[in-house]
Image 1 (cartoon, rainbow, N blue to C red):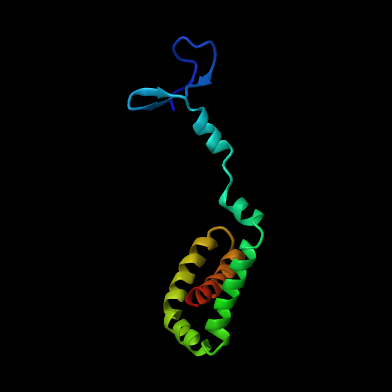
Image 2 (tube, rainbow, N blue to C red):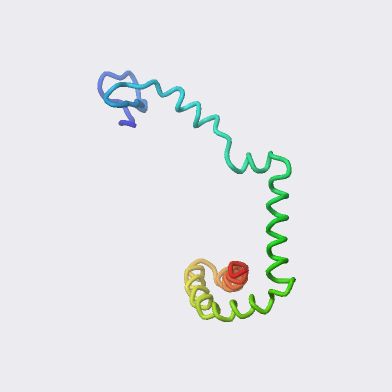
Length: 121
């Protein structure tokens, strides 16, 4: 990338774009085409039938295995151990959000506590 504007012998404002590899100019067309025509990961996941469903099913199965099938006691003990950390993080998040909105700050405390509980799973 270079200067934007009217420099040198140009006839109008423009953006100077060039690519060099080992001191030799390279045609940027193929690189630009790859960038412009790139399919995002989100499009790949949502357009591929069954991938998103399998991910959701596996997450649901994992949560069921950890919480419902006898693991609730372990989760509760882990949550109690993490509670002081979650409270400290909640206070920090509350302070940041309170600069913008007190209602949002209050909601952020619950969000951190719930998200912290899910992370412990």
